[in-house]
Length: 372
Image (tube, rainbow, N blue to C red; front, side, top):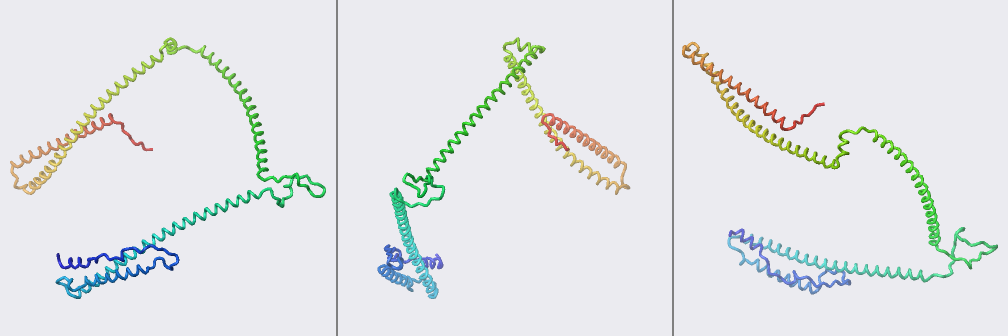
């Protein structure tokens, strides 16, 4: 372990746990105090004792005897100052965290108390509304002076003062209910009239149906005459004479289906054979293409060789002997044969490609885009 790691471990040394900084104060939220979160006398004494213990512990850590070997005293002093500041900040964070926790508990208690008081207020308001309704209900049959609009009093007028002894004060809902009954009776009358109208409409519709059926009967009679004078063909005679005509038709349909299945199998067999032939032709075409490409390369090399020899022969035309003429003639003949062979193979490849395209067009439908 080097010196810097050792110094870092010394810097991270923690003081022993002190009583008073990490224990919350007793929760005595008294509303008479100006600040419920202020330090109590007992808590202040605990903090003072803890602070003195902290100071003693830090001073013990800052002694020169604890200084490691190999560092200067000024560096040790700065390290002690930074460590003291770090320890004080950590303890301050712990104290604030405890205060925050106490404030949260105080807030939760106040919220619960507020909810309880709100419920009590709602219960009191419900009781008050109930008492008000009871008072209104018990204040009936009393002499009350009312001011009514003209037209709302349905009492026969007399010469002087109207007598209301035999009168009754009717609630508005009673009149509205009577009006609704009148409306219902009117709607029932309208409904009965609609039913009578629908009944009359039904009679007219039945008469129309009778006329339609008479016309259909006349049409059927005409069709029967047409059937009587119709020429009976062989198919019709077969249908009339054969009792199981539908069975015979189904038998014929079954035979046709068997024939279609046989044709499909034969067609699939032909398709597989054509595919095999196309595959073989494709392989042949590929081999011929590779041969042609190799021959093209050979031809190009031969052309280069011929051109070089031609150039040499032109340069050394004066030195050419009679034996050289025969050799050049043989080379020309050989080149001519190679060119003819390449042309023949190219024509054969073209024929094979046309045959492959023809077989492909016979096997698969060609979707040709028509230009309009």
